[in-house]
Length: 124
Image (cartoon, rainbow, N blue to C red; front, side):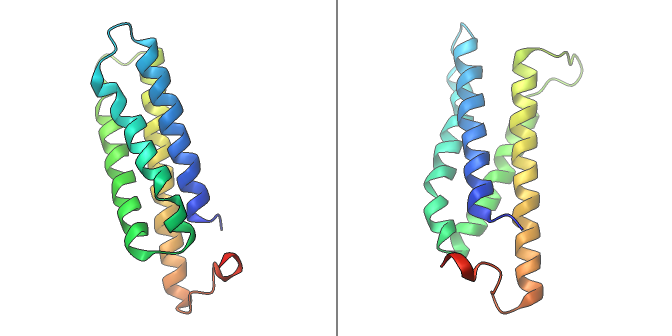
């Protein structure tokens, strides 16, 4: 099982890099394009606390990641979908968030089934 802080770091870096590429590739430079990189920076800031197994931060990161995924996917225009740079970047960011939430929930379920919090004792 992959540790949640590793998944969070990868997801945050995807949001930052893809969001900045989307921002700088648009000549209008809309401020709404900076929402994904901002959320990526917030998620990256939570990595230390995820490594220390803070339950509140774990639940908050899961919720913010799910909301970020929904936000990014909702910006895709499915009626006139074409493989433009914008749509591909939004799809990559949305899939990254949804996959990260899947890993977070899977980790939570596996830890609850064991009941002794022994999954990640090796990195404490």
